[in-house]
Length: 259
Image 1 (cartoon, rainbow, N blue to C red):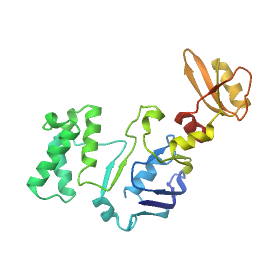
Image 2 (cartoon, one colour):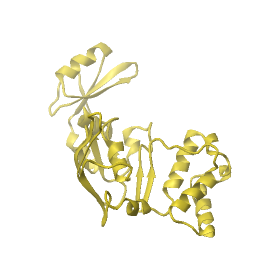
Image 3 (cartoon, helix red, strand yellow):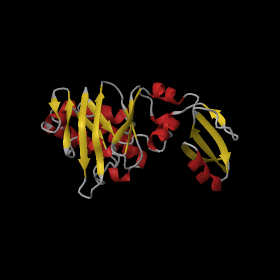
Image 4 (cartoon, rainbow, N blue to C red):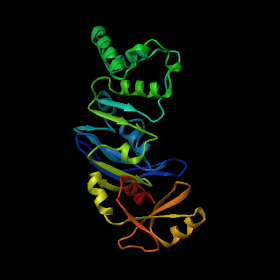
């Protein structure tokens, strides 16, 4: 279990990235959603021992993350959003190097592990190719392979599915939405969407009308659809004025919490 308690972080430029964040995360997959600048990456980097918080604690089982960084790193797999590689080193060589750093000293064991990981991410046929020649997708798959070295008990992946819509991004049973450095929503995605049941309404409007609807209604989001703007609002009752009721989606839940 990962226990995050009252975590806060303010950068030297005055930006408060985390504001008293507390989360208890059990075994299994956990999704963290939030807009750019919400504090997601700061939280993940802090859990991964790459930076310190100003206050608060993180416990992973009986490991105090801030005081036992090396112990946490032994059981951690981490894939940052921007994953740098040594361009002239092959994938196979780099995985061997990282495996040694993780304490896998036995040559036979390490060779079997590297081979298995490269096959698992479909890079075995490109194992001798320099990482600098990999495409973006290949680099991402290599990043996943290195994160799995050592059979980690905790795996942190920052923006693993960038470009997918919110429904496709999340297939787990537990999630949190973070905005402005705070946890603004937490729970099972399907149960959280029930809080918006029969409350989402939509209407097509002209681009020049969006500001008016934003001022008059509790707008969730507005997006371009079929050449016109489609606005979505949160209303307990039928707002009339040509609005039609919609089934709530994870996208609606997300934007209703960060708007």
